[in-house]
Image 1: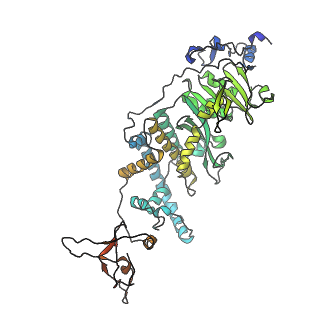
Image 2 (image 1 turned 45 degrees about the horizontal axis):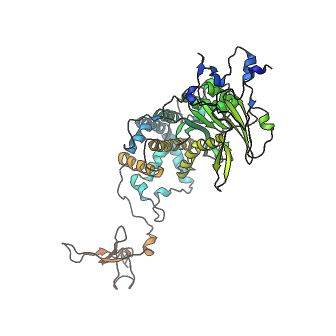
Image 3 (image 1 turned 180 degrees about the horizontal axis):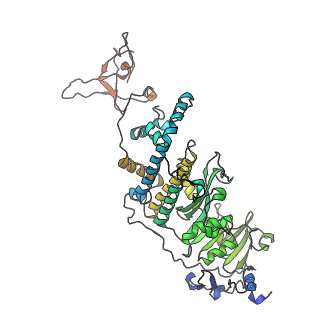
Length: 544
């Protein structure tokens, strides 16, 4: 082996003042011909020997490490592509992403599906009358202990159930498995595709982005259901998400459906984890972004591909990955020590904490920094580990928001659950978009305001209809009441009201008893009258 062709680990200037000082030459095909003198390695196809030499890692002196590789110049401009600011109404944010075009799409497909299904629904309705099963429609319940009058005022349960029954997002008659671009998600594909495009157009993400998995709880029968023991749900439908590291804004996602998962065709020669990364990051390449991943995605091969696209990356690494130096796995080190190997701009490290932690980075060296633990102890950790902990939690922040507002019900069709997960994931993105643009409201306040705005626009709160509840209010016997006399008016000097308790009783003829009283309780919202006089049905007792 010609040792003169091996890249020294410290052949670049340690006094670099700016990441923009390095020069990169890119040929017409898009690959890198050479870095500046600071990173001189040749990845051309002319000489196989030069290529093999350039891919060898060299050990770094961790006691006196050289300067870390510089970042690529960040050429993208983080911004929100909206014509309004935080002072604008929340409905403008909502309509910027979920506009009338999406509503028209859902209405069109829902109406078509209703026409196709109305005939087959008649025998099912008859069957439900024969085979009776209990239901749990608590939102419309009239029990005083759990009643929520808002839902029944906005819409009746029958109307809501009818709309929910015929909710649909695609045309079943035109669906052909062989020609559909994503057949396993055909039921929700138009909505998923539309929302993904909208959220890419509205926001340009910051420099630091992350890719990770999210799991929607599902324990039913499904061929591509996943089991992930480290996730809270453990069983469910897995999605790969690209989020902003700082905010958790979902910029793109892919729902995993097994072998039929839709990836970009030009990356089909790669392993699946690399296909996920390249498909999600395709619109962000050559713009200087920095990607944070875990060891499921990270590899030296992926780092080389991203370098050619002017994209940095760092994250944890499996030491048995292809092209990783074997010494990284075999070499024993004590707790707190670190070893590292460099190949061009790619640095792989192994740091011993409670157990060995392997990392890969295109922007870090094995530099150690001092940190203070929760026990006020001063410890030394690699800088790459500290930045990884700060930027890897984008998807976890999103899952935290979704967990606080669980809206996916157990009962329902499979594709309803998928749609609900996608919809509420992007609603969370709307909240984060408003926050990035200067909004101050919390996640809960934003959701409540959106509900009020939607009711004002599409719904009309109706008054109380139908017969009164058969069950009396149990709190009328236990709450505190304060006696008041009904004030006289211009027309009536001694006004009185009907006694509530007496009106519930009947006389010998079967007619309801009517007694009037001048006393009532102001603390009761509806201020019904009650009797506290001796001639009432039960003497000496208070009725209201």
